[in-house]
Amino acid sequence: MREFSLPALYEVPADGNLTDLIRRNAAQHPDIPVVARKRGDRWEDVTATAFLAEVREAARGLIAAGVQPGDRVGLMSRTRYEWTLLDFAVWSAGAVTVPVYETSSPEQIAWILGDSGAVGCLAETAGHEAAIESVRDRLPDLKNVWQIESGGVERLRTEGAGISDAEVDERSALANADSPATIVYTSGTTGRPKGCVLTHRNFFAECGNVVERLRPLFRTGDSSVLLFLPVAHVFGRLVEVACALAPIKIGHVADIKNLTDELAAFRPTMVLGVPRVFEKVYNSARAKAQADGKGKIFDKAADTAIEYSRALDTPAGPTLGLKFKHKVFDRLVYSKLRAVLGGRAAHAISGGAPLGERLGHFYRGIGFTVLEGYGLTESCAASAFNPWDRQKIGTVGQPLPGSVVRIADDGEVLLHGEHLFTGYWNNEAATAESLSDGWFHTGDIGTLDEDGYLAITGRKKEIIVTAGGKNVAPAVIEDRIRAHALIAECIVVGDGRPFVGALVTLDEEFLPRWAEEHGKPAGATAAELRTDPDLLAAVQQAVDDGNAAVSKAESVRKFRVLPAQFTEESGHITPSLKLKRNVVAKDYADEIEAIYAS
Image (cartoon, rainbow, N blue to C red; front, side, top):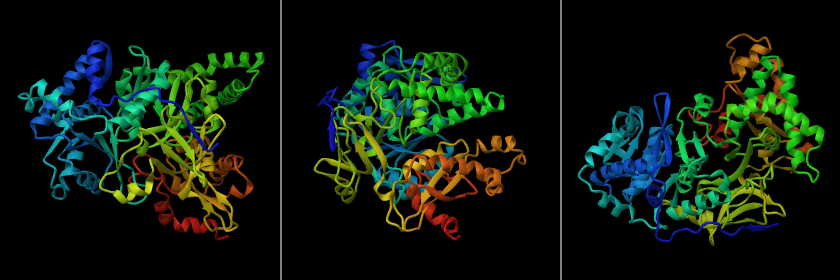
C-alpha cells in the first residue's frame, strides 16, 4: 500500500488558541485536579481553577516586563510543575515559547535564543542562568532572565500586580489557530539545530485527535499521567497539551533515578516513555530475579507472557492450558511488575525508537500494553500510533486521524495534515527542501500494510551499502542488540566495506551487577572489561540475537566494545537520545578500522 488516511475525529477551532483550554477547564471542571505538584515528599493536587489563577499571575509579570504579542520567550528547565505553568503563561501573554534543553551548552543556548530573537528566558537553576549570562553579549534582544529556583515565578507575580485579569485575557485572545505557539529546535544530529515553527493549530490537530482516538485512556477525573520525558522535546509537549485538552491530571518528575518510587507514589493510569525505559524495567526485573535465585521462573513467565500475547492475535486465541499458566504467572510475577509501574496503569505510549516485537508482546502479555507511535518535531510529535483497541505489535500504528501517510517510490515516508509545522524559523532553504506541495519528507524509510499500519525500517541517510552492493538498514539489528541488558548502544558500520560490523557500548548501570555475577573485580570499568572473554561472549550472544532478525548479508560479523558509553556531554548523542552517527564514526575511526584489519 502506498498511501493511507483516517478521517479527523477532532475539529480545530478556527479562532481559538491553547489558552482556551485552561479557561474552559476552570469553567467546566473548576474543582477537578488538572496538575499535581511535588512539595517535599508529597504530591499536592492543583485544581483547574487554581492552575488558571497561577498562570494568569505569571502572565501578568511577563506583560509588565514588556513582553509583547508574538515575542519569543525561552524556557530552560528540567521536567517540573513550573514548566507547564510557564508554558501556558507565555501563551497567555500572547508570546511564543522557545524550549531550551536544560543540558544545553552555552554555545547551543546562544544559537537558540539568538536565532529565535528571544526577549526573555525563564531558567531553572543558577547554573542555567550563568550559562545564559556567559553568552549575553551575543543576545542583543534578551532583556530579562527569571530564575525559577531563586524565586523567578514569585518575582513575576509581584511585578505583574498592576496588570489586570482583563488585560491578560485580552492578550490571551490575540493568537488564533494559525499563530505560532512555539519554536522547537531539533536536536541536531548534523549541523546546527533548526527551529520548527509549530502553531496552535498544529497542537490542536495533534492532541485533539490523539485524545479522541485514545479516549478510554483519557478519562476526566480518573486518568492521570506522570511525565518524566523532557518537556523541551515535542513528545513531552504533546503530553502536556493533551492532558489539558482532555482534561486529565499530569504530574512531573525531574530526576528519573527515583522513577519507580515516584510511580508508586503517584500511581498514574498511563505511562509515556521511550523504549529504553521499558527495556530497563524488563532488564532490571530479570536481573533481580536471577540474583534472588528465581531467574528460571522469571524466564518461564516472560516466555508465557509473549506466547499469550501472540496467541491473542490468532483466530483461536490462547488455549486453556496457556490461560492457566498465564493466570499462575500473573499472581507470581506479572502483578509485581505492574506494581513497579505504579499498579494502576494498563497502557503506555512509547515513541522515539522501536520497542521491538518481543518486548511489545512481553508487556501486553503481563497486562501492560505499550502502544508504539511515530513522529518528529516537524509533525508536532505523533504522526502515527497504535489504537488502544486494535494494536499491531511491530508497527507504529495507523496515521493520526485527519492526516495522510504516503510511501514514496524510494520508500521514504511522507506526511500530510494539519499537525505539520509551517516551516523552519529563519531558514527558507531548509523549509523548501523538506516541505513540498504540503507533504513533509521525513527522511525515514517505511512500509504500509493492508490496514494502513506503518512500519519504520530505517533512515535514508543511514542506509549502508556494503562493498558487495547489499543495502543494509541498521535500525532493525541495532534495536535487537541493544535490547540485551548489558548493551547501552549499538551502531552498525560497513558502508563500502566487505561486511557489516558494529560498535557497542556497555550499560554502566547494569555492568557492575554483571561483573559481580561473573566473578570480575569490584568496580571494574567498561574500559577494563572490554576485552574480557566472558564479557565478549555475552556481547556475542546479544549480536547473535540481533543477527537472527536479518539476512546473512545484513548480519554483524565482527564488533568492538568501546571503553565508555555515548553521552550528550561527549557529543555523541543529542538531548533526545539520538545517535550522532557522523561524530561517532569520526571519533572512533580507529575502532572501525580495527574491525576490518584482520
